[in-house]
Amino acid sequence: MLTAELSIQTSILEATLTACPHTTIEVERGRSIDDGKTIQLLLWVKEGEDDEFEAAVGNDSSITEVKQFSEDTSREDDVRRLYRVEFAEAAITVAPGSAWIERGVILLDAVGTFEGWEVRLLVPDREAFTSSIDWWQANFGSVSVDALYSSADDSGGTGLTSLQYDALLRALETGYFDVPRRTTLEELADEFDISAQALSVRLRKGTATLVGNSVAEDPI
Image 1 (cartoon, rainbow, N blue to C red):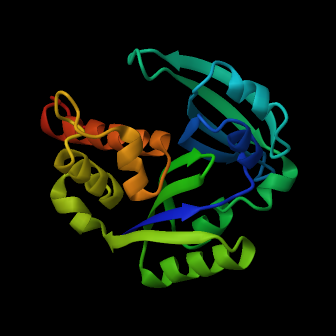
Image 2 (cartoon, rainbow, N blue to C red):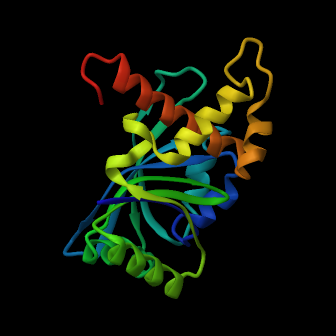
């Protein structure tokens, strides 16, 4: 098995993220319902401004229904809300889910900002990977392969993705974790050519993985 990390552009939720440049969306899980006629996603939404997501997604033609389920306030500076959204019929035709399923590809993670989406996929082999990339380029054109590696070689057994590993290592090297800090999140994000909120998510998810795999009684 291979793990692929990609940066992609998609019209799904594009209008929402464009209207909410300080919002980050993380896909919790997705499913196809009603014999494939509808796709539902559970999304964790972290907003820069209260209610900007709900206001924007209500005008997003790629989405027909949105419902808030819960709010995670366990981190005072990182409040997240869990939503369920349903794709509009036109959006289903451009969703990559069916094409990935046909090739045995599994979506592991997906994080979206106004800059686009970072996704991590579990791919059976290089043939399936190449076919998936070719399909995406034929239909959408914009895809960047950030990393491709054997799942057994995933960052030295830490459980980190290569992007998380690189971000955490650079943050440590530049003094981001020092007290006081020797660099800012914005300066660090510039090195990776991504937004500060995208880097914040990458660092937070990587830190959570490290903590879960090292000090938790039941590693996640």
